[in-house]
Length: 188
Image (cartoon, rainbow, N blue to C red):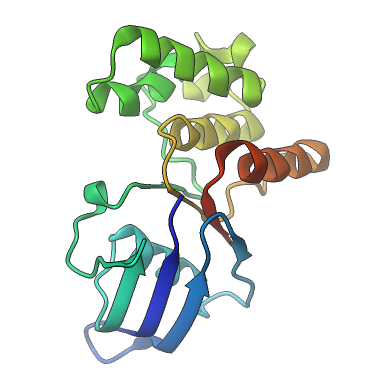
């Protein structure tokens, strides 16, 4: 869990297009925040800045009190789920869930425990041996969410990842993410 601070953030793209102007926001540890606004207003840009996928033009971005403007994405202890899922098409659901844990060199037993925990949480047990192309849109979203959740990040960023889920599962997942994981969550 970590606090997040946007301090006078500007994002200017080449050619002078300013996507973010003097943005300020403090997100407390464990707080859930939803960015709401029309298309093109900068919601996804803010998530990409926080994730380290875009660079801050001006201002300071802090995670847990530490300035992260120059910190690479892999060192920020966060996970991001995109609207377009971003699953590995050649890997089964199980392998998609295990992969981020294997990259962290976790013991095999821990990988199995965390994979099963996420599979149970998101009702993925019957899908573990399927490839992404064999899944519905909602199932793919659950796998993408699971791949992020299994890492147990301090910060969880979601760029419209729940849009293909049915209303019941959407409400359940939102509640369980906040309660079970004790993390900071920013959601578009």
